Length: 107
Image (cartoon, rainbow, N blue to C red):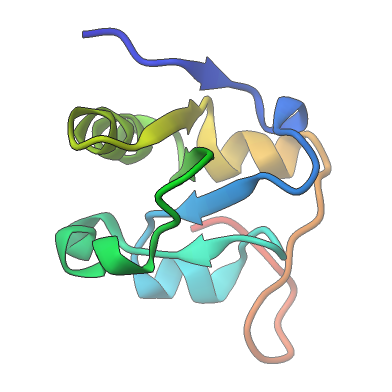
């Protein structure tokens, strides 16, 4: 089954971005508007996801997000993988924030 993918710079403004990385990765740096839903607990957090509209799914490099995207699509969501993940996000110079006083980075 193939999934739709987009480059980080091609995510529409105001889109719902879901970051499926683990807590330490999220804390180090993430997109300012992203919602954190770790892939390891996505089933437990389904009620927190919007049921309407596209969900853009991001991880570090695109592997976990591709799996999460496929699973979400199979379960009735409209999910799109963010190709290259936060590595590509960072390379494209898109905005990032980190928890605390640290400089945002990708783990």
